[in-house]
Length: 487
Image 1 (cartoon, rainbow, N blue to C red):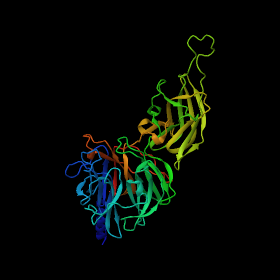
Image 2 (image 1 turned 60 degrees about the vertical axis):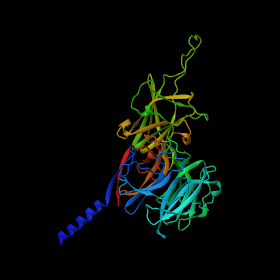
Image 3 (image 1 turned 90 degrees about the vertical axis):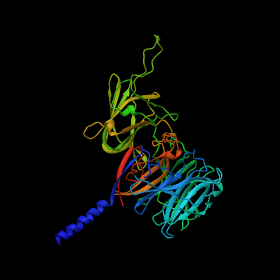
Image 4 (image 1 turned 30 degrees about the vertical axis):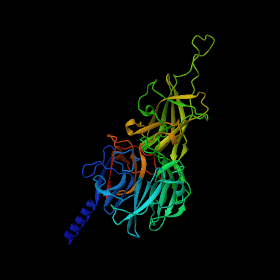
């Protein structure tokens, strides 16, 4: 009996192992199908139905993207690495310009429902709906002009979201003003109920929505139109699917101009970064981010004192050759619940021939980001910083190889450069051995080495990171990452 139990357990354990697959996502290499061709599927989504992943997208081929030759197609995979081309999605579509295919499954009707954005004539935007009995299609068109509340303004990019109770919603923007809203769909997902959230954004496109721990996340950013610099990702969070959204920051914008010299571990007098006074009399803050949370208990700021204005050469009446040396006062802040909060510090200053070494001590804390803000009372308009050293509880310095990123926030973050040069297409909930993880996906327009639009790649980010309050941490480019998925 004991041997039988061991045998049963062995088979059970082996089954668990077989139900897990390690996947490796590489963002530098073109994804190819099982025939060796580059996958041509853009601005859509990846959804798992049964034990296969289905990648729905627009095939652009060798066009500019504004062509009547584009069409929708589907690929499928068991591991998100080996993709089989399933073929075109729509049967006999009318001539037009096609974008943003999204497929969801209706449990009541047992139909796969495809919503898409198309233009009989640019920019006469419409929504179409088609259905199929199979996730790979083909899909039969039900309606080529589905009316939504704001159809009269023309409709553009769309996304779909299905809630835990199987209620479905469409997220879309108008052509006029690119105003974004959320609208509830009918029970069969084939039309809108015209119940609308009201405009949540304007000047935006390429939205996505997901739910985590009872919170609804609505992600969107400014219009991009195949831009190769990419767009940001503004995050809005609510306890309801169509109202109460609060803006929680942009997770795909550099928080300022990168200033790697501040954390490169090299201290030399004439290698410094300049912090300038802004029109509102404040100084541009310095922000430092970490790839992984770091325990820190004090900072040393090396202020260069040698770059000071002086009197005119030959001025024999002046008693001073250079401006007086002043020490700036710094406020230290950390981000909590999407907002910046001050950390209580003790300040000391060591004056040397070339530097004021300003030390800020505080209660040891685990930090992912912190900000230094100089007091407006500093008498000059520029502050020169050579280095910012960070120390842990063991007095061990945090080194550049620990993936530290420094920025000077002297521009509006809404107009700063995206960290990932991609335009959002979808956020995929992925069932892994760690639970459900959320994968941000975006199109890297202009990334094809042969300049064929259909060969432009997609960026699939490492799982989004959430803080204790459910806010999403800023994204960072990752060349390659891996996880273990379950069947």
